[in-house]
Amino acid sequence: MTSTNHTTAGGVILFSGGVGGAKLALGLDRILPAGALTIIANIGDDFRHMGLAISPDIDTLVYTLAGLVDTDKGWGRAEESWNFMAELRRLGGETWFQLGDRDLATHVERSRRLEAGETLATITRETCQRLGIRSRIVPASDKRVQTRVVTEAGVLAFQDYFVRRRAEPVVSELRFIGASEATPPVTAVAALRDPALQALVIAPSNPWLSIDPILSVPALRTALEQANVPRIAVSPLVDGEAIKGPTAKLMAELGLPVNQASIARHYRGLIDGLILDHADSAEVEAVEALGIRATTTATVMRSLEDRQALAAFALEFAASLRRS
Ligand code: FO1
Image (cartoon, rainbow, N blue to C red; front, side, top):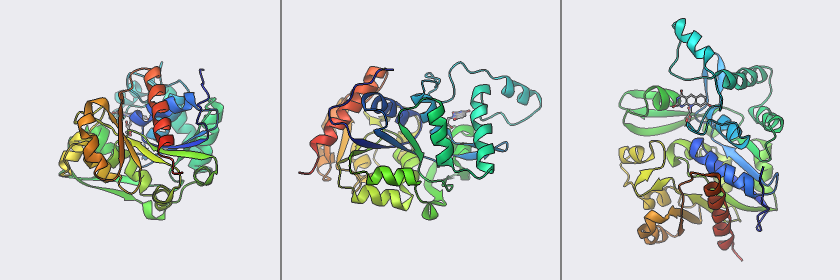
């Protein structure tokens, strides 16, 4: 495992969804000293499926940081086998949500421990320790926050919309059930209050589908609003397209121009700076007109080097925004 102690080392908090966010999480994890990174993970995608408690974004982060993720898909386990799914198909069971044999162990064990009364934060922390992960991965809340997608096909649970229906139905609204009563776990609160905290970073995850469920937890939104350290986001858009997933499609359906100003407007009051891809340098001015500092770099992360370079750039950008 390579690790370069970053010159501006201190605590860093990353707000992250699954696949896109996990790439930046890995870059930060590798360049920061062990224990300096806390990742507050989206739980709006979590659901119960076939009696199991499934937390896809937490698992994507865990597998990515542990070096166990299927790097082609971006989720699930590498070197996976699919015997369970094959047998389930034979029995006429539900197979629209793919659960590999190795991955299944995570869900079975998490379900058992939740039923025994343990919290999602504790289970996730101990899973990270067992898998040798240097950073903290903390769910946005121990209480459930469930994303509901209001579409032309009705009000859908997140995975029904995203996986079963391939994000095809036209979306008009998003709801986060349980958010108003949700509170962040103590480990997230401690990281937010840590005097060594140097930056709050929003990953290039889908702002509406992956980051908003986190920000719907009142104490987390307030923490961002009132932070006295630099707050930055990495835009998920490159040249009017999302690197992965339905961000651009969703923005159009919500009646928003598919550009960087819309991302900046969405995070207004929550961020001091926004990182855009070089391809969008013409949009820097429009973002800065909203009172948010903008800068450009290469935001498409193909290799581990790309992930580390973007992570280092984000920390330097945040440091440059530090109020004196
Ligand atoms: N995404 C899919 O597109 N199809 C699947 O069958 C699928 C299964 C799956 C199983 C476990 C897991 O942790 C993630 C899984 N994902 C699957 C990814 C996931 O549902 C989405 O990428 C996220 O919820 C969006 O961040």
